[in-house]
Image (cartoon, rainbow, N blue to C red; front, side):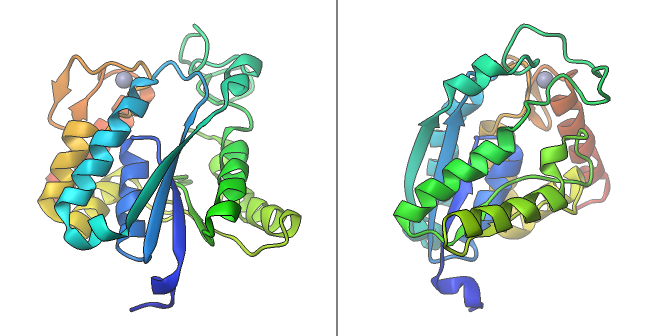
Length: 237
Ligand code: ZN
């Protein structure tokens, strides 16, 4: 076992593909794993409804995972949706904004998520906070950058006088590699669970089933997920 075996992890878990792979990654490593979700008034709140099914599905995949999977927590951050004018929280077109960032960017979101997760982790005794941020094929979100996460890890650890590790296992891999990592961690069964039960579509559309899962098929989140899945399949993984 690795040195992480005795540690407790808290996974930022939205019910999407990336955070599901992060949850599998944590279950494969840590003795105890809890999950936390955030309700910030996102228009694709349907992803929150996927969370229970995904958690149950993960537990059913492996008895060891079932034994390690602890409680789920939900934190309401409705004010974040009120102060942000973005395509995820208001009726705003999904497009590139004048600031060079997509209108799906919610300023401060990941900073708040990790800070709240740390406050919860402080109480729950979790030393490791896991998030699905990714710098490889991200949408230009500055709070997904490795430098941001590193600085936040230092700020949180200092500010709470407790050493936290902010783990981001997807930081340097692309979407195709995220699918491969899922297969590596949980086999074909985990890949199927991700296709059937996780949600990524920004529009919250679950009426159309594609070979990569449910979604509108045209928003940036769907396009990224579809492209990654196609590359994963083409690689014969
Ligand atoms: Zn979509």
